[in-house]
Length: 398
Image (cartoon, rainbow, N blue to C red; front, top):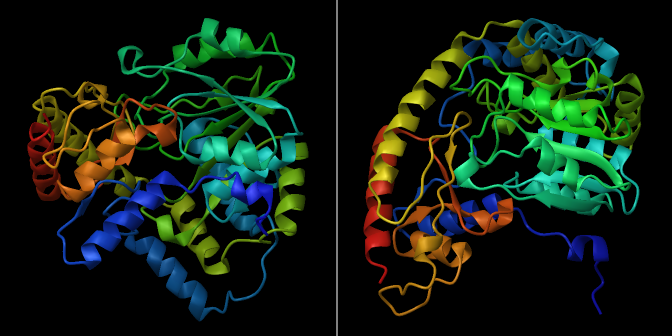
């Protein structure tokens, strides 16, 4: 009998972190592994943000902060939401957490009761369904495909709603597909939510600035549902601050107060120095963000061209984020040079790691067992070499 709780025994390990770990273990053995597994840019944190952190250390910002974050940070976030997203929030509707992942966990733990249903379009970020599980909710998936650019329709949303539906959770731009919902597409989904006033919406917008089709639209911009939307965002992607660990939620005051209450018993507040850096990031301009987006757009074009040259892959051109999510099921059932059968995307990802020395992530963990996720958040030279290796490894299957 296990001494561990059912809660932890039923929880899955993060697939992205697992593949990164396997890649590091192989690299430690002297193998030249190129990792395209983690959602982490190869850019450095902007200098003006680092300067603010250094100044904070010198000025002794080393004490406990308010659980929801420094007031001036939350005011800077509220100002950012107004300036960049046309959203009106007061600072006390903002809760700063130790990364956007904690902000998501806060929202789900505060809103879900056992048996409540959460509608999640697939593919989805690996932690969504596991966080629902932790909150004792039930995930209800709407499956999409590369043929529809991985988007759901209003009729599919309507069909998934039951009396037990409490939440709808999605990301745009999406991880792992890069899919971006347009204002018109969001408006059509909002029309469904208007008919169901008891459903709340978790909108993960962490990739908002890595968007190649124009201005980002938040579903919270639609006044008819705004009070039911929990916007999730943070510093990790736009400001290349994955290790700094700062995310936030913006929501109704009732939900914000609940998240504050929960967080007070779990982590208290995030790092005081990171918060001071956050004030600088959200008060500064978007010049470094825009430069990074241009680099990603160039990499996207390169990777699209290279992946399109691999026979058997079905590839679309993502509108945002920094991932490709090709359909690879044509390779299922093929044999590796050593005679092993590729039964699914997990087998394929392990084969590509051990034989091609490229780390990617199987789509099964994202709710799509026919695909793999490839991150292009690395240099063009590494991307060219990695896809050359992938092409050779795919060609070796028979």
